[in-house]
Length: 448
Ligand SMILES: Cc1cc2nc3c(=O)[nH]c(=O)nc-3n(C[C@H](O)[C@H](O)[C@H](O)COP(=O)(O)OP(=O)(O)OC[C@H]3O[C@@H](n4cnc5c(N)ncnc54)[C@H](O)[C@@H]3O)c2cc1C
Ligand SMILES: NC(=O)c1ccc[n+]([C@@H]2O[C@H](COP(=O)([O-])OP(=O)(O)OC[C@H]3O[C@@H](n4cnc5c(N)ncnc54)[C@H](OP(=O)(O)O)[C@@H]3O)[C@@H](O)[C@H]2O)c1
Image 1 (spheres, rainbow, N blue to C red):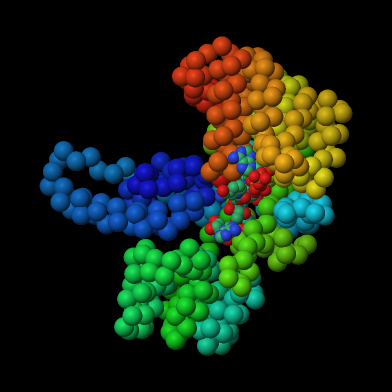
Image 2: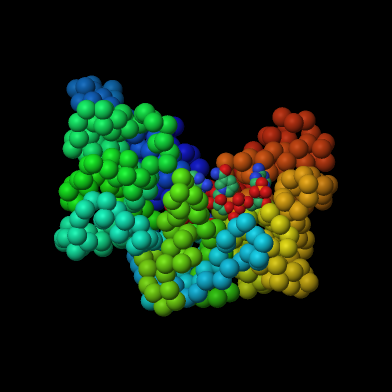
């Protein structure tokens, strides 16, 4: 089961990958669709394995040699400490971090936690429950040919579609429902889609509304339609503030997801909710997701090297604010990078002030689109590899935050090369050295 998951230990499902697998196997978790980076492929594979598990345990029930799956306790967590038990927070404000000319739309978001008294430590993430865009909801209701006031699950259809269900991407169960309601080639197509096939080469673009448009002669009943949709999942964001510095306040650094498919603009659910659909004073459901293995060193004198391009800078702003608030004396080195120096240098004033005050010992910057050739944080790290090695030899902890798919791997590769070159080791020895840093908790990642 774990092999079917994305294995980023990103925490979006509310577990580590290993614990999520154990919880499913131990039958304390029935939801097989929680692995967000794994998407539908993971959900499908977990369903298959889950069914096999049932068969296996039935066949093996007479065999004493089979060890039963470990049952995971299902204790209700403290309020505000898990996705299953959220609390209310107040949205305070948003501020655009990019300047004119940027291709990005990144927001600094502030919340007030005083309703719940929730606290956190730097390195933790914040889970938020967003609401769907009303424009999208109303278009879907129109495609269903339904009244928005019709009651479903004790609420109006409009409320359910706004607050309770995911409208992207379309789940297999929606294709299944459509296959029952139509016939001929359409039915075959819907069946194929329900089984993960891609008969028209457009599966990746099919959100719930696109499915209703694709099968425009099928009008499911609102109740059956809602039943076929997945519940709306929360989204996690790295906390970019410190509770020690600003008790009761919490901030995030959010990159807004917007893209166009065909002629239709698509909106990332939570990022655009924070960017435009929630107003100062509004309340929302939230929780703090405790970091596992992503925290400041216990010894405040330990030097730290933080590598966080783009929104990856978020937890490092928090680390720096925390070290200042607690008077930690360890040296701090930040590698930050983004597309363009003149419009994408988030928190420039703050970071420059931290450098002037001496809190930030070193600030190394890399702008990928300022020059003719791409230049990334790991290119800057290689340039100053000797100093990076000296910090490592002095016991520095290293942190990476941001994109999991390429950046984190490339940065780790650069670190291995630096250890090999300046630590006078073979590549294999350098790989073991970095592996050892990880085992000792001196190399930590928060990637998504
Ligand atoms: C531990 C953790 C920490 C995180 N911290 C941060 C953070 O500090 N800041 C931050 O901004 N994000 C962070 N994220 C990511 C965040 O949780 C969300 O995944 C992100 O904001 C997108 O969510 P959304 O609801 O806006 O978009 P969704 O509705 O989830 O849509 C995103 C999906 O849209 C699709 N998509 C996106 N772009 C395109 C495109 N061009 N073409 C086609 N399809 C596309 C992809 O399928 C993508 O998965 C973090 C994630 C984790 C797990
Ligand atoms: N799926 C993906 O492939 C992918 C990639 C990046 C980000 N994201 C997502 O986009 C959202 C937020 O993005 P963000 O604001 O953090 O910015 P970002 O899009 O991650 O970009 C930040 C900076 O990192 C650079 N970068 C790109 N590839 C890199 C690599 N291999 N190594 C080092 N640096 C690299 C970018 O350069 P250029 O853009 O100029 O190349 C940019 O200067 C997150 O949700 C993240 O997961 C997804």
